[in-house]
Length: 479
Image (cartoon, rainbow, N blue to C red; front, side):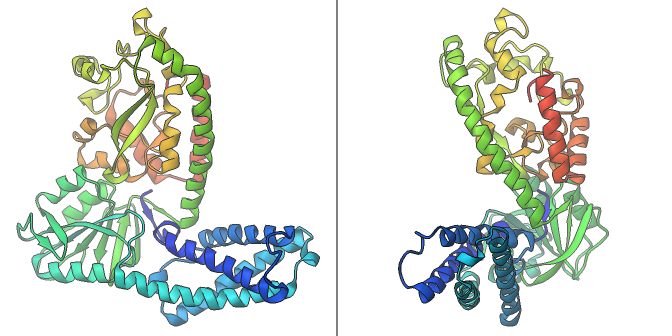
């Protein structure tokens, strides 16, 4: 969502998994050292403790951002961070034994030995794995990075970022700002645009973040940077040279070997990201279970009235321009997409940036009258939206976000419209609970979504979810 300060939870997921394995292995070794190779998982105290170790480790890594800058840490810094990590884990494990009143059943020698073994094994494995990651440029995650630079810095910049890819970006392309080299491949990275075409490229393609490496011999790129900020793109500018920025939030960090000034529409921490993603996972699981029940009820009704697939899928545009398949219960006839062109003149949204009708004849059962068909019922109570909980569980969407545009809507976007794509799209959002049926100006929709991104907090998401439930129960239209 916007710029995540560390995002160690996701981009260093391999370190998380390795650390959990090291902790469990250390606990097992400590137990065997004290009691021998038997009965480890048969004793409830030790079985429960192994699970507690997993949960405590995950929570501590997320809350204290223990993998922040892990690839940039030297031997001594890693030593101190590992010591801090071990002390926190042992402290919380001891606290659990005290609270659960099971300390008397658990060997203190095993607990202390676990800490010592965990430090030795964890530190060694981290050092070895970091060397492997940096030498092989192992990328975890799918953050797309576009490089903007000049011809004189082109080869050096690409080489340095690939060699020092601490952020573990997928370098999707490079734009040369002072010469047309479009179509060439430099060190395995395609040149995709010039200074004049790069804005249009970013507006139409999947780009998460942009790195700008200016030249001391070239002019400032204030206008270009401000356009990127207006689009909601996270921008990293090498501190060699930069102009005045209009991004809402800024910080100093590192991209590859370069110290950069990062500007973004908003900034979140790992803790905030984990809280939001945890809400999405829990909500996604519950929503998928409810979707299964709704399928048993409504699938026959849909099929009887309009034989064909029960589910409807469509390509939508997600965070930062990434395309994905959205899923819904089908509430329209099979030829709905073809008939949409015929109905565009009745669209209630100005300039065609979205599509809404007062009476939509494509809805299943609409021939009975406006609002009387099974399709209208499904849409009225937002039943058609429930399969999107699968999108939430997959990570394509969030419980709360912005409405994902269709491809044809997205192709009409101006620069400032793209700011809506700075977050994952949501099943519900600020626009949906703000009297959306009465809003016919797309610019007002963009304003509501942009304000949501700027003001985002977990509390705001909870308020929007609560309002959504009231909207649905109040029968104010489908979400």
